Image (cartoon, rainbow, N blue to C red; front, side, top):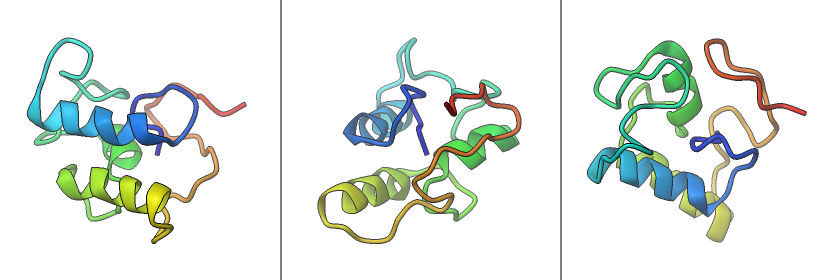
Amino acid sequence: MDANQDGGLDLSDAIWILGHLFLGGADVATLPCEGGTAPSPGPGDLALVDVNGDDAIDLSDAVLILDFLFVGTKSPALGTECVPISGCPDRCP
């Protein structure tokens, strides 16, 4: 669930999702795999950024990351280990 594709799950992933949803801008205008957007993601984009696994990219995905990191609640839908996602650059070591 490395939404910003920097090699790890951290606060910056939640911030990236919020920026994509609410701010736009060149660095967050498209999703990182197939270049879709939250209303129209590609399958790889959805797998990567749909943190809670509800088949949508929305505010709840950023909230789940924050809850996981700071409260210790439910982990992301794909877990916390690096997994290859079809359509996305392979960032796994």
